[in-house]
Amino acid sequence: MIQENDFQKLYTKLQTKVESVLNISLKGRLPVSLYEPAEYILNSPGKRLRPFLVLISAKAVGGDYSKAYNAAAAVEVLHNFTLVHDDIMDNADKRRGRLTVHKKYDLSTAILVGDILASVAYELLLKDAKTNINRIVSTFNRGVAEVCEGQGLDKEFETASIVTMDQYLEMITKKTAALAEMCCSVGAQIGGGTEAEIKALSKYGKYLGIAFQIQDDLLDIIADEKDFGKKIGGDLVEGKKTFLFIKALEKAKGKYKKDLMRVIKNKGIEPAEVNYYKNIYIELGILNDAVSEIKRYTQLALKGINQLKNEEYRRVFITLANLLIKRSK
Image 1 (cartoon, rainbow, N blue to C red):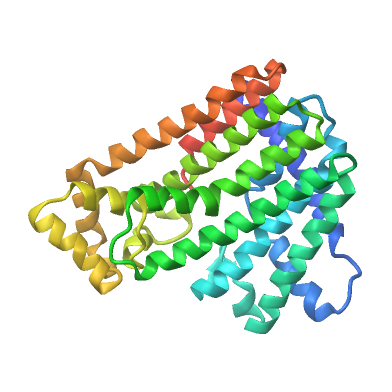
Image 2: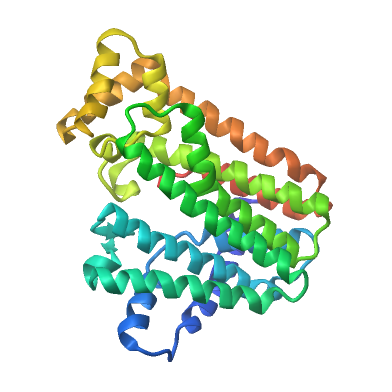
């Protein structure tokens, strides 16, 4: 691994470059009624993890950062397009500590903002897709489609009486991991990577994305509320069928089984019940199961990058994976 301070310097440097592209991507466009709310969502605080994946993937295979900044910004714009529409579907009030677009403005504006962000994402991507244009755009488009399919599956789960672990993994592979996979693939393609390098980095993004989502499920129940930025146990309150819940349902018997089935029947629990269900997870060893799976998928992510010739960037990918495992929000 590289030193964490050096990693953070690199992350901040690349994040600043992406921010500069994002800041000018919508400037001067009309009508203001559309582009002001679009700028509002792009200016909200975020990890900018996906653009970072594009850039380090391009660099790892011998490319230049400068030739991938627009593509990196494109995936962030695309990500925000999905967030705007997700918030509408979930009727969410807040996103990253701020009002969601449809709450700050209105529903029609938010739908249109999502649409224009998708268009701008392709516009930015094409600025960096100088060679292999068809393949790069196809990879990008496949990522968009899979995110939408994953969101569709997630909505289906809301009314499903039972969701299997295989179904859950298919959903998060599409909804969360596909975008990370696409970022690594697009970056490697823009950087001129070999087929083996593109494949290895794509797998890194996919498996890291799965680990990231399971970690999100775990943090919902164990994180410090101040760090996490939202109420602990929100997934249980909303009746979401997460890794933890599905694994608990698989292992539970007797009263625990009945209580877990009651969550499905009632489409969630009361906030006062969160600690009780957290204790069920602890008693059944579910938290340890989640940690084991996070580590397993992280190791799968790291397995392929051993074939990258650039040793420095192998260490960057390893450090990123380890930091994501340790994150608290």
